Image (cartoon, rainbow, N blue to C red; front, side, top):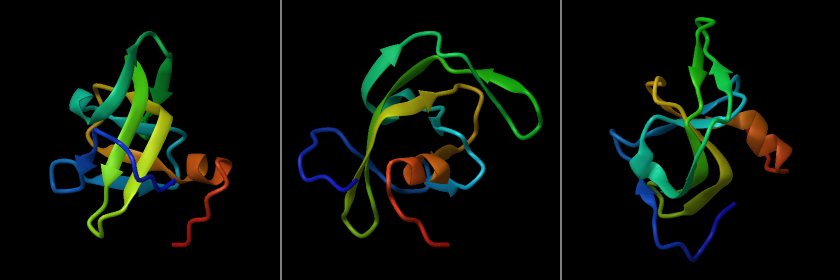
Length: 103
């Protein structure tokens, strides 16, 4: 999950804070500028907590630089959802990839 070589990355700060969410099915962001690679398309919808469905308008890679200087690549499965308000990292997706998270 941690990488050494990546040309485009996002600093984790107030505007670009990512929240680890144990109930999110996908990694999600409303910000196009977060993506280091991006593919526009119709990728279906995600259902929000209020039961509203929001369209996924693209997918791609996001590279994050944490506050302790580690780089973290969310690889080819970050969904671009315009109507979401937070950047979310899916705890379940990390588990599926073999990463261990302790809360």
